[in-house]
Length: 548
Image (cartoon, rainbow, N blue to C red):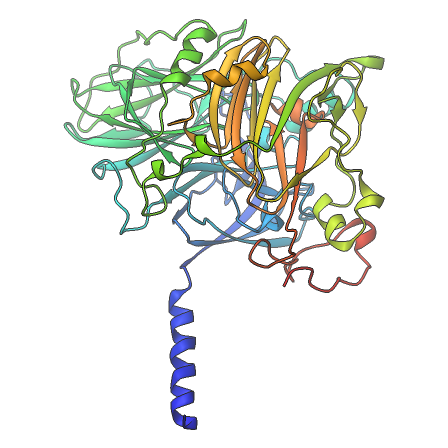
């Protein structure tokens, strides 16, 4: 082969490689404090580009997302991408177990790919109680153009970022927890950072054209409370939750537990006037309600003051969960139908029971998983592991897979080894009187069952092994259990946390360490050259690449 031909071939290969790379989407965030009044009381909040909620991250499946974060607040800062799996790349997960914080007055650029994912997600600041001060925003991933979506394109899309809200600052609330106190009940509920009066004096949050269908992306980014979401006279068709297309059932209202997202369709087929959107607390002794106005184009008619009633009790919510089904014939991020993955036919290799508990020993409030209350060390767990100093920072496997006594609590980093590509079952058992909500970073799982009482092996006969929804959050009702199934096929250090801010801050979280046995780049990326170091690792030489 002549030199000219070789050159042409090499050029063609290079060009094909460049062309084949997935598109990039770039964002620059200036994070600062600002004064807002979500409940009518001026308070300090964390803003992104002077916005709350923050700017939307908008991409398509397999896009590369690049976010340059400038930290202009007076505390270290990290952002995590709730529900984004970050395949092979826990380095960008934005939790204190994987990354050193972005120090005040500095910046850091996140780069991650939304590989084989679609749907409605959100991001939030992960350190301390920052999420309670703002810094949250929507993250939506569209399907690629060649992959069909199982419903017609809507006229438009609207975000509803809902959550309970406190008027005290996050620093004040953090002081309560550090002194052994609880943060108590919230002061209200907000929808997209505000709440309406509903008396005809409010400006509409969104406008609809009569006869058109709209997509709503609904996420509960709050602190502790499950919320029921509903719209006057407008039923919702559920089409997606947390990355999975669902069977398209119709609901008058949806219970959205903390950390969860739903995508629905509504049709503007009612009298052309204003209507109230409602988000109200569930399973609490107090009742808090947030409102927003959605208006028909050209409307001058105020909404009816009569709000649609909320459901009562958690049995209703349990039954609603049981109605959610995976759409087996729809394609999600990949061309093959969702139902082509037969998770119910895979043998379980390990069962892990997760039991939450609370301690008030010595007047100090702590929460725990299997008797260990997590504490973040000065060096991120993942960095310590990569540098070969894991034993100096934490001990693996302080908890057992089947805890028998969780009355005593140990405060320590809580890290559990998991074998790469094992198909496992995790049982969440909630022996407390309040509802729990968990998120697992790096993965999605099949939520196969949820029942009152204690779990034992006989409960497997009640599992949904056909069309359970594949998702990344799970609620656990009081004195009840929930079961999930998944393959640990994403190497890295992955956070599993309570979505209740108080519980999470005081230790109800842990990490799964999933290592590639072959140390292959097919399984996990090496330490990025831009990754920040901290603690005693700061002055050490960067180790040679671990994966090849």
